[in-house]
Image 1: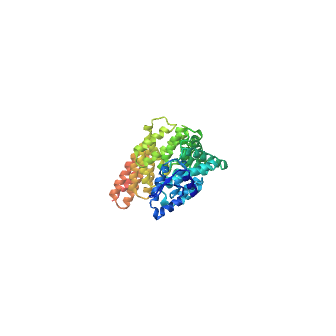
Image 2: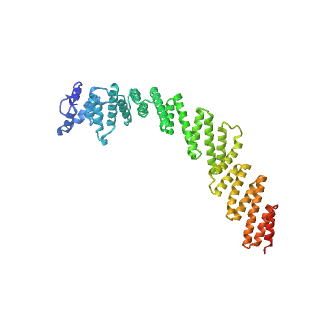
Image 3: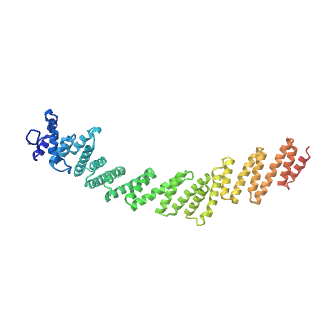
Length: 462
């Protein structure tokens, strides 16, 4: 380092004049300069030296004047500068990394970036593609670093060659190839070949994930990144359709929460935009129907009807008026929910759901189902001798009933319950109440001779 500096000074006419002494040519290195600055009798040395070399310390290119480069050896980073001058970029980087963090200023950052770029160029010449890319990647992270004009081209070639070599030796290492190509893209964002290779690698990696690990959201993320780099690529588009179909089918379950059904609906919509297959429209209609049911459960009537109307519009087999049909479909879904899922639930739960269904569709079918449920609950109360509850339910069922057959059955059943209740009150010596009850029994079934005979016997009790 001393010799290199002295040689650079010797090539130039650099003169230094101390007070009271004649001017002399300079030829020295950083060690001698440091010793002279420490001499008590040479207090003027530092200022005189700085004035003498000032013309060569103006900012210049890295490959500028030899003396300007030699003057870099006089600072705290002189050894690192010397290693770089010798072409020992890796050693320079190692020496810079050894500098304590508290001493790493702007000069350190600039020298590190320069050393890393030089190291990358050397690796690139030696076809060490991965190492070249790693050096440039690190150089790009140095604060304030401005990479030279050849850095994008070096990064692009290094990334492409490293990724292709990796995939040649291991077809399944799309993750490793992606990492290399992403580094290259960060340094060469407009390089068409890098974008193309990275897009293709994303697509192939997504295909593998879609087919093997079934992580459909991850596959979709990769495919969207692929198409962002290579819009319109038919292979990526084909893989996207497959992954979307798998994800949509995975989420389209009757018991899926709203968040999953909403994601499913968006996936079906995107699938339809790619390929308007009737199966995709059926999938969208399924998701929207169950979202409508969920909204109805939550008493969000407008939302429920709107979603059902959207489901009908999506359904390729429907060609009627969706706005008119939607409320009826919601009511039917709620009624079917009672039949399919609430058979073992308490009557209050079933009744609440059926009342809600009727609020959407006051049809004979839903009324008939309500009558059936009400009669079934009334039987339980009757057998437990809770006659008032049984009577209340049968009377409600009678109000709901819309067919002559149901009306006749309910009047007969009410006659039976009222008569049983009358007998129970008579046995408890509640004769007045018993007479009123048997009278109601006869009113419901006036043609029943046994009821009239029972009425005469109860009326005779005192």
